[in-house]
Length: 220
Image (cartoon, rainbow, N blue to C red; front, side, top):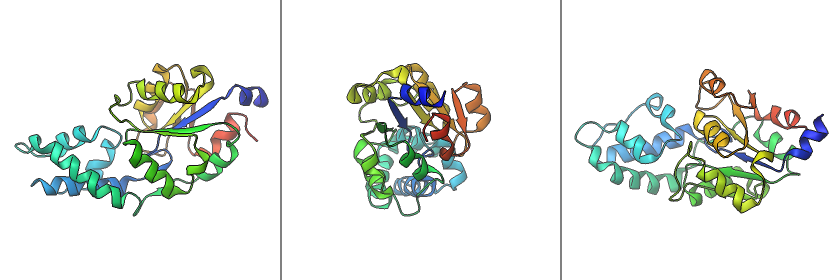
């Protein structure tokens, strides 16, 4: 059973923030740089963490006080300039990520994220895992998850079949996008999304650590 399942896996696609990397503190720090640059107050991490994974403009539109919403684009630009140099100050790989990636390196692995591609590549390079990924795809002028366009682009660039590919993520948007793209889905319960919300999306798998994933997919 395990060997058959492994042969059916052509591609595994991972979300980045909240799935591979615990980047909450660095993202929150950059968000506060953007907020304060346009005259808004800084916000505690607990206000920012649940918004991670949404488009930046949506995050700033929600966090800026009334009267400053029109400056969300300016805040976004400040975020991007600051985050470029501070994207891995406090970010760390989640436990189990390295083991997972190394055990599944016999199949192509990819990253699909709401980050811009160049920024996602920069983060992946900081992790030391860049050589293991065939593709790192960000949302450059691409609709954000749960729209499946991002994943369809990944499937097209890698030449893999959706029904033999997996989307692994920590939010309902990841699971919804994977299903809409015709992929199988795995929800991780340690990231930003709640286990209860993820379970309601009926992913094919749910894991509490990525260290569990290789065995669940039939890898040694």
